Image (cartoon, rainbow, N blue to C red; front, side):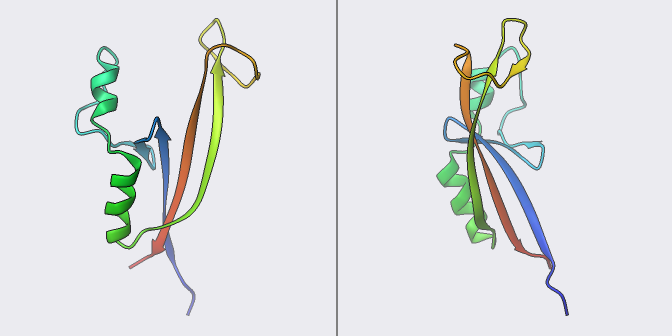
Length: 97
């Protein structure tokens, strides 16, 4: 019998889990006119991991990356650009039911 697993890919910015498998995690809708309020409604990473762990999810990897945005607003991966930010991606798994 082969093992089957379920996976979660979690995007974290400034210690808040913002998206999991592409789904917004905030208690409020994502509002481009009130980004700070939207962002603040997302769970802190330790809260999210505690809740996920109690549901049987295991953290298997974490990666820290950065991106920059150039003057046109396009994503740029050029180090040294003044408009950059760091973000984490967490990978969780559990046995599929």
